[in-house]
Structures are given as C-alpha cells and as structure tokens.
Amino acid sequence: MKKILILVVLPAIVVVLGYLIFKSVQQPVEFEKQRKIRESVCIERLKDIRTLQVAYKSKYNKFTSDMDSLIDFYNNGTITIVRKIGSFDDSVAVAQKRVFRDSIPIAVRDTLLKRPGFIVDSIAYIPFSGGKKMLMQAVFAKVSGIDVPLFEAAAPYDYLLAGLDRQLVVNLNGDREIQGRYKGLKVGSVDAPNNNAGNWE
Image 1 (cartoon, rainbow, N blue to C red):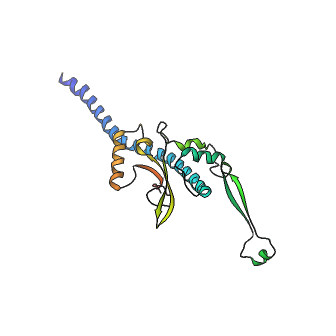
Image 2: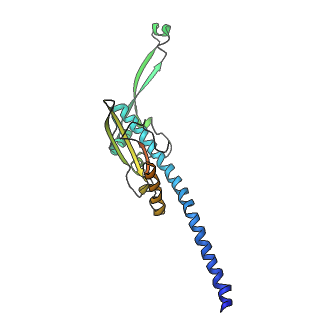
C-alpha cells in the first residue's frame, strides 16, 4: 500500500500542484495580453469618436452628447474646406489678383475616416462588451469666464474587459482609483479642457 502511494498518488499530486502553479502564474500574463488587444481596438474607436466630434464642433460650434447625431453627421453632414491658391504675403500676386480663397463644402464621409473596413455604426459600442454603449457627454463649461464646449467618451473596464478574470479586473480598477485615474479608457474631459486627449496618451 505504501509503495502504491509513493509510485502513483504522490506523482499525481505533484502533477496537479505543478499545473495549478503554472495556471496561477499564466493567468495574469494571459489577462494582460487580452487587455492590450482589447485596449488597442477601443483606443482606435475612441480616436474615431474624437475625429468626428472635432469636425462636428467645427461646423456647429459645440460637441454632441448624442451618438446618433454623430453618426448622422458622418453619414449626411458636410464640412467646409478652404482651398488656398497663392499667398497674401506675395504683394505682386495679390496685385495681379492671383491669390484666391474658396470655401468648398465636402461630405464628411468622403473626407474623414476613409479606411478599409470602417463602419461608422460601430463607434457607438464598446468593443468586446456584448453590446454596451460608449458613455458620451458634451457640456459647456466656464473657463476664465468664457463658455467652452467640452466632451468626453469613455469605455469602463467593467465593460471593455467583460469575460476576463473578474478579480484581475477588480484589481485593475482598484489600482486606477488609487492613482486617481479613470477606471477604463477615456478621450476628452467634461471636467476641464484637455485638448481632447485620451487617457492612454
């Protein structure tokens, strides 16, 4: 009986313990790998939102908090491009009337985000979240006594990292909270002007 215990049971226990140790070490490594993949996809989406918000503001002098308005702006809106011919610094060209400035309206969809595979409707959703929507706000805030338009779009880690190890997500959120940082990815800010920067930049 003692021989069976040493030859069969003990090696089985060693194998199981070895597997459990490997799994406990590998779990955070796999989590970080998946987190980086998901963050890169989400960052691209937040950059797209920022691009459209900046164009929207250039047309309407404000940002929008409504994702449907932003998508409609992409599909049906126009932006004005100024075509420049010549330089006003060239006095001879100005005298000869060879300096022109023309404003040309161009469809947003023909100008912005023209990359293969881009689907504008996807910007409304947090990737890998099972259909959770991006959190988006737009406000006017007083800055030095002047009303300034601000916006932010955000994807909380609780949604972006859905399906990954829950304890590791909780730990990540806890670390962010201790550092005073947003618990997820965010572009822009409704609290203070930040030049529409992302919190990953």
